[in-house]
Amino acid sequence: MSNKRIITRRNIEPSQKQKEFYELINHFDLIYLTGAAGSGKTYAACSSALKHLEEQLVDKIVITRPVVAAEELGYLPGTIEEKINPYVDPLLDILSSIYHKKAIEEMIKDGVIEIAPLAYMRGRTFNDSFIILDEAQNTTIEQIKMFLTRFGHNIKCCVTGDKSQSDLFETNGLAWSLSRLNDCDLVSSVHFKDEDVVRSKLVKEILKFLK
Image 1 (cartoon, rainbow, N blue to C red):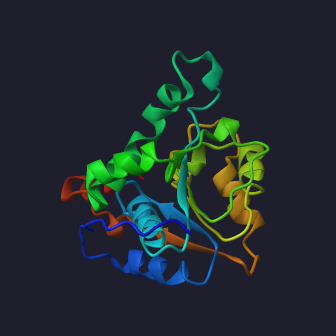
Image 2: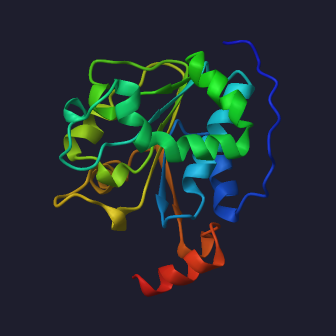
């Protein structure tokens, strides 16, 4: 494992659902975190990933997100990093809210935190890694099948998303894989409800009217 990094953690009292997840991640290698925007599911995944890295349980963090539906990265201008950055910036913001931004930037520079475009993950295998697939409701069935077969030895994986917020006009990979893996003893899930929203009172109230 990599050398331990001494980084100041910004402690925030976790919600009940986050506590439930933190307990489950000790026993399951793949966990689905679903629920409303702002409920803390992605924060919990990022916080756990950094904790695993700090405790030398993994060598690196791999973060990925699907590009908007039907859009290919190859048609976008710039380098791969420039193409994918707008899609993973929300995760980097969350990471920086837990640990100092400079430390996060250094880990990205050193390759300890890797941004892996979902469209370019075919053929790869991840070992000794904590993997986060965010906004999984925008993956196709083929994409989620490909992603779920990238796991090697000593991995933890969090798949996060909100089944009600998909941009696809077909069955999305999040809903499909959740139903297929429902009886798998090696996979767990935590559903965050509207009352778990931690972003603000305004968001929590708005969600009541958007159902």
